[in-house]
Image (tube, rainbow, N blue to C red; front, side, top):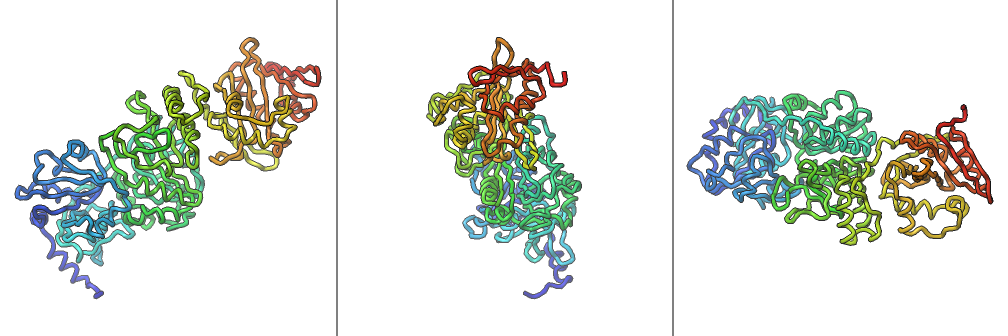
Length: 626
């Protein structure tokens, strides 16, 4: 290819300069016009196109745009018809009323529509930065599908905005590839960062618990992603590979939390496709070699995404049913947004080594009158992410891990993170549909909240690190596996007789807790979804005396390491705070390990031996020092 001299491209640039009216005059009736995305909507060109009275039957295609969408107004019904690849607020009414169309498609696959000319772009209206010394204009804040549209269009009209930042990466177009150029100097559209409320903060904390040092993140725009960023200050060497980001990323870069140093793809770089935020964000990306922009056929390609180890994707949902199906683009029959990059990143993160795809949503809507965890999706609602793709679902009540789980396990996990007042309804429906056991423990209308503040790490003397937390209804399989991993001696010591089987009906008795007078703490190998249960401590109410019966169980391989002692001290502390007077326990005389646990608890132990069984009474108002 012959090299273009500076004088040549500058002359071409001058020759291509035109007024907005002259530039949009290239659009003819019946053609398809692409409009630039997000904050890079070419507002001047859109306004001029909408002002044309001599045009008809023109199709407008684009992703979400932040600015004007006059072509979607009812008065222009015969002149324009919009086709949305992602429905934004400025065209939602037109789509709902049938005056505009919606095309559901993965964001990674839109560019191929243009390149293969299955969707022919006659004219692309885009917004770019002024050309550099070599004649290249940057797509600025939006590369996404704009690059493919511009490269595939028969005619390219560019609004050359002096305020457009010069983004770096695979995001440039040369002056020679632009047919008409309209210089402007108007502020880039902004998307103000939302304030983090308490609800978003609770969801964000659960998501942050799934993040590890060195992870690579995909974050979108909205209250929950913004809140997540505020809970990442203590992490190290995080990276970013995302379709978009907003202002919330900047403080983490400045604090050295986001370094991208451990990324396995594009180390040292934030990789994105577009940004939406404030002028501060646009100044941050301007000529910044830290940030690389790529088109969505690259950033959103699941095979590319999967090359980032510890890839964590965070995407929103409108509702999730008890089998794990995710609706994210419609409110029943009303199309609301779009598929976007949710499936792209869910599948990419799922295939990443150590990756975690996360779907996040509040448990309710409409002032807690509607549950967003539902027995079945609303009539007309579409499945964006299938039940086979879903891994984590997070609400303000916790995280449910669904991948590889049975329908029963999925339903129980999702009910556990639903709003407490909707849990009895969800369980009842699940029983009718045979998703769970017919005799599954009923949930009271006044459902106690899971006390997440009791979660803690346990450091043993041998340097082992274990995770301790309250028991959950969804722990049935873990309790079952713990039982079947015990020696016959441990079973006899715990249950005072030999038990060879622990079916569902017996397991349920161990799961009946209310986190108040009936309580259980468990010790797990870690805090992951695959963690094994290695210890459990129960105390059960005795309202007449206010002395609760305590019982403990530790896997044989972990006995003698201090787990029983740690459980005893923890449950005693919890019981005291709840006003319980003390513990009682029955221990076989030969169970020396359990007797040591009780006698090391820090409280005076009153004991009686009868028929080979010690009856212990441990009042909390009498310590060993007293």
